[in-house]
Length: 217
Image 1 (cartoon, rainbow, N blue to C red):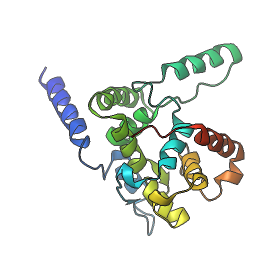
Image 2: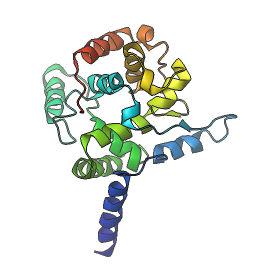
Image 3: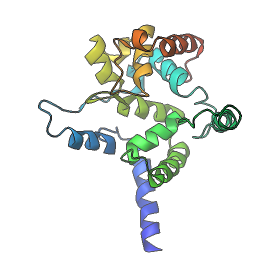
Image 4: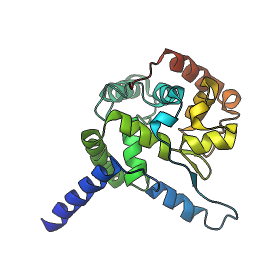
C-alpha cells in the first residue's frame, strides 16, 4: 500500500501546485530536447502568458477546432466517443482520436506522450484530477501555454511571435485559426500556410470560431 499511497499523494500535490504555478516545462518538452539533441541550433521556445494576455479569439479558435463541448464535459466527451463508435460500427470508419482539451493537457503535462495503454491510463487519471482541482479557465490557460505549436515551439505566444511577429494578445481571427489548425499535427503543419494546404480544415474552423462565444468572464 505504500507505493500507491505515495503516488496518490505526489500526483495530487503536483496537480494542485500547477493550479497556481506557471507550467514552464513538461515531459514532452524534455522528450523533444532529447530527440533533437544532435540538431544544431535546436532549442525549446516557450513564453508563459496569462490567459488575460491572449486574444479571446485564440480561445474561441481552439474550442472550435479541438473541443466544441469543452465547457460542458468533465474531461471526457462521451457524446463524441459514442459518435465515433457508431461511425466505426455502421460505416467502417477508422477509430479516431477524440481527445478533449483537458485530456491533451493531462497528456502533455504529466506523461511523455507515448502510445501505450499505460500512458492512456495515466492520461485518464490526470484528466480526472485536473478537472477536479482546476477551473476550466485554468485548463485552457495551461493548454495555450504548453501545446506544441511547431518544431521547438510550445504555446501560442511562441507561435504568434515566430509566425506572425506579434504577441498572442494581438492575434486576429485568421492568425488564431491558423495556429489552432496546426495543433493536431504541429510538426508537419505551418500556421502561415495551413489556410492553403489544409483549406477545408481552416474554413470549417474559421466558421466555427465566428460562431463560438468567449466562455470566460
